[in-house]
Image (tube, rainbow, N blue to C red; front, side, top):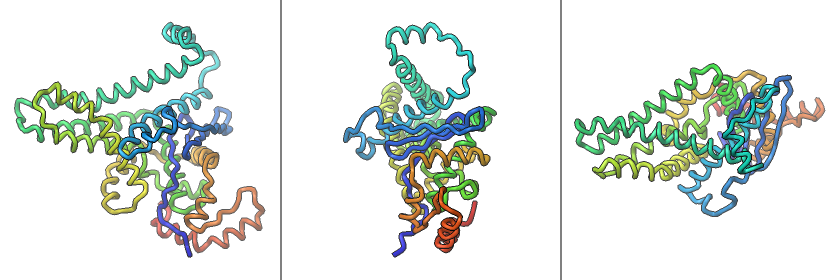
Length: 350
């Protein structure tokens, strides 16, 4: 009996780093970077999260908060590692604050600095995307007496600020290459989940938008916050703000479940909910060149057996890279019908 599926969930995810791509499969992750001399450097390791294997980190509507923080920590670590290949030979002398942290925390100073950076990023995100829209909407309080309407206005402002932020970031020249690697990451995952052999040609012809992208998650956060804040019936402005801040983990938890469901379902309703996020990804992803695709493929292959995945989910036996020409031709002949059907079901090469 055929095991073929369309757009089957593979479970891997990742992010773009400086001149490279990080891919994660369960507890294993790999970072592949194109070094200045043109060679590819790949690092593989395990990341079990800062929370360990506690049961609370796996509970629905709670796991999203833990996963979000873990993603930020791992993302910062891999981004820092990739940046090391492009630092100038003469390192800048550490500032007084860094010297102080090194003196106090010793070898743990780097982790402390990373933790402070992540904490600062979260505080800034809350200030810009939560507090600022609330503060602006409060000026309309004298004209809009309906709290529900005021919450909708606040939500619209929040989404507009988020969109403006995305547009400004995407317009930066230095960010463009990162977004190209972001596109390569998505294309690799789409290539695999649509039953295609993982090679440069197939990846190049795959979509650069994906339902499980962090961009879509953040947009879900914005929309979910609008819905929840509509039910806050507190007249005191201080309490309204405090409740909003307390609801942030709830919003993140709900948004995570939505993005998780979107990545596992082809339901038309879920597809409709995912459409705005996919549209926004046209700004946060760019078409990669072949060298970038090679980097993304190297990262995938370091942590994920895509050949076994295609065989189990699509009945496709991909030729081994080290196999002989005769073996490759035999495998290609065996898979011709399956491959053609997989591409056809995906709407041909995009």
